[in-house]
Length: 270
Image (cartoon, rainbow, N blue to C red; front, side, top):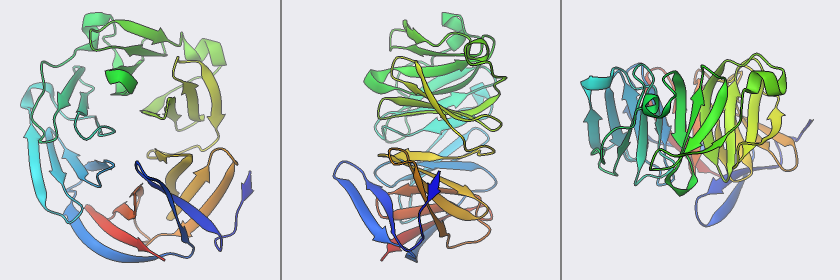
């Protein structure tokens, strides 16, 4: 893998309109701070921030203004939040398991989905898919399964441990632009196409968070932001605003960092 110099371009995805590039080293302007309180966060392509801890989910805009919140004590702690579609936010609770869909005000839409009802009681991860589908990881059979809004299974990978000859213990799951990304800290990030066919493994090990925008994958390692361009198999590295941050996300011209129980929002400036 060839690493490009920090003097060249790092591509930041501009949702809907395409790409915008900024020269490295970039400068940053602090826009806002959002309390994280020991929890986790994600973002959407409208630059909103979703902070979750325990059974509470809060939505902020990029200026740090609280827009709405959601809390449901029925299902235990929130495991993950998928805001790929800001009009249909998916919340997954691993302990039950249960999947809830929320609208843009974080009000629940319809009844929750229990993967056990379609034969997958040991679902450990789930994420939104295209055409209102859902991908889940069936830990009992080490497989990915995609089903539609009527709970009809559409695609299955089969047992990945057997098919790939690996001992998988994945920690996160996401779909973007017709590819599914299954992140395993010991194996790397496994990519599958929209039908669940294995494509390749990106050999980034030890990651707990990453984000895909366009053809670029963003992640943080050794307190630096990495941008990996998947088509050219090249990588840019840039020092981040806060050297103690442990997670980053990029939405349009904004950088989000998890730093000391705070999500710090920076405007990326050339």
